[in-house]
Image (cartoon, rainbow, N blue to C red; front, top):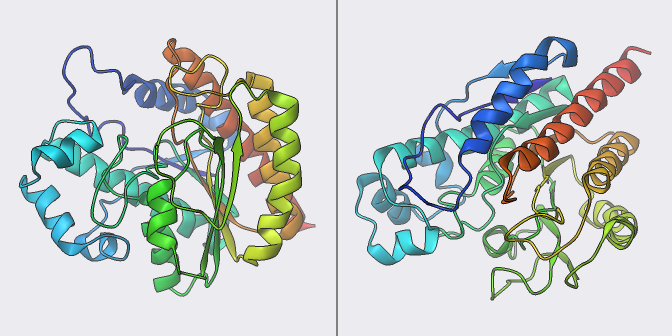
Length: 308
């Protein structure tokens, strides 16, 4: 299974910034240590080009962000200071999801981005630590290559993917499905094709029941050729920015159910890590690492079924 990484394209943040940037390096180190056992090939992605980004974003927005002409309001909405490193890292993270989806569709069955899930970036603006929307760019990249016609976005970050929903509104070829905390960011939530908004404090049983009821419905309605899965760590009970209360075993069961459903329907999928803001960075890394372990098992199961 291919795992795309871009943590070494460092995003410089001021001291005390609350975004846990260290989680990406620590996740990479843990995956690297177990890559042989898990059957993982680590891959550095190419940076997404202007042309590729423009399949989801306004060309003038891409130009302004890339040239350092973003106004203060742009970066305040994003939550990061502007720098050339910030833009390079954002392009590489998009490239990682593009690479993961392409690898999955070209025969691997599943591949992962050790970052990504930047679902708050809309057509002409960023938001919520997201500059470019890797999910939509990757979906339209796969369509451009003729690898897929219809895609399903399964967004299980604790925050609704407002940017993804807004960009894909009216695009019947990309079905957007989100399970999120009803009262959490963003305040304005453009409708996804299927939204499941959960009350504060929702735990494992209620969450997994909602997933079991709605994911099959999303697959039936989307009729996808592939899935882009955003496996957020932020529904975790210990997350600073999440209002839900899932345990680590509950989040692993969430991932297991998504992989099982994709396997049942023969759906290739890319997996992005999306959000995670627990006070202890190792809790975030634990959750993301568990997702990757389950993805590697899914990859072996898919390969075994093909070879049977």
